[in-house]
Image (cartoon, rainbow, N blue to C red; front, side, top):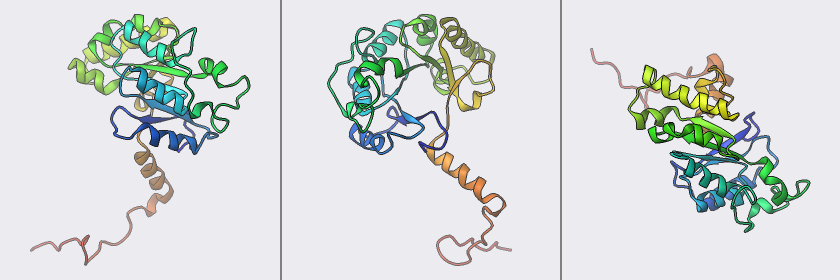
Amino acid sequence: MANAGYDFIWTEMQHNDRDWGAVARMWRTCPNAKAVPGVRVAYTDEREIQHALDAGALVIVVPTVDSKAEAIEARNWTYFPPLGRRSNGGGQAFDAGMWGGVPGGYRNTINDNVVLIEMIETLEGLKDVDEIAKVPGVTAVFAASGDLGNFSGYRQGTPDYERAINIVHDAALKAGKRLCGPFAWRDRPDFTCFQAGSETAAIARGVAAELGPLANTQPKPEVGPFAVPPKTP
């Protein structure tokens, strides 16, 4: 997956029970892949963001950012001083096998290379999105298609929902930040970064493309647990 053409791999930690040790081991296996390690943390929290960065993440996605204060907090835990307040505590990100061998060293260069994406998913976030987008260090603002509808009650495709998306759109552009959304929105104006589907869905699409007309051409089994029962007259 890391060499399939993506810019970064979205490791899901908001809706998943995996631990950071497992994530670190996974990222360590492909430090030279084309797609860099990225993660959606569970919430705005020093421990969550610190674990992700120390393990080697270069993209941090923060869900349900509701205010400028929360946007600043996420920024502070993402960046080393002087822009932020990230602790210099080590971790495999500093190892030569990850990013420790980059010219200038990891500590001195990561502030210029880390990507911070903040998700707008609630009416509170929508109300403060202009200020959220202007926070220095925020790379992109994500118009969260599903949860913005979930928290607002606006059904996708309705005028109220589209107005909400346009508010996020306008805030990102005014602040000079990237505008992110689901991959299905890749043809929408000004959206330049996207969340693709899951790895299982990508594998299924790849298999279907490879097999083409040969997919699902095997005869139906007549015996065994997958046998199709005969139709009764």
